[in-house]
Image (cartoon, rainbow, N blue to C red; front, side, top):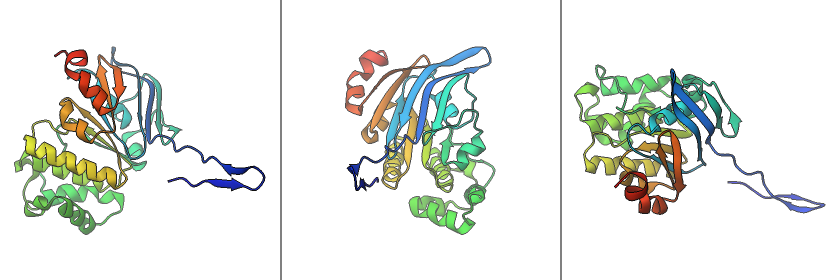
Length: 249
């Protein structure tokens, strides 16, 4: 929230605009000699859910990795809260409030639920605080707290990954294929949780192949094809053209 400042001589002064929490400007990225991103422009404003849509191989995961500091850029700019952060490491990015949940969830299968959660104590929160928050949001995790994470269902593992990420108190949450391998009911539950997180002040960039699972909660949608942003618009605008224009029917 911004307040209007009044100058006695000139009257009300317009407040400085709040910069985007995350911004990619003309970003290029490659894996060795193979260029994957070809000048990507993408912006996430405070309190927004931005859906990054497109087929496999379109560049969504690479975009998310660049945004998280996991993959160096070959060109362009990466900005957090208006600050240029080219060359940032994933560790530093996390310290600045940018948190990634990768495709495949990224839990430690041979550790229990509690042990997975305890890995987030580096944020300064105690084990008890982290567990309390996780179990409040996902009560099933309390029932599974002494169970090996690898023996849980895909949905339960996704809940665990999300709980561990939230222990870092992120400003921006990057989600890569949140719905992959999950039953439709669980996908709906997970996106309901994402919507709640936005109400609590977290901004979200979610890369998702199955567009209609995320469009109901998105504020803005971008379609990525062949390493470029092919279209940006409201969920309604993008949904109207998804099948025929962008994703080939």
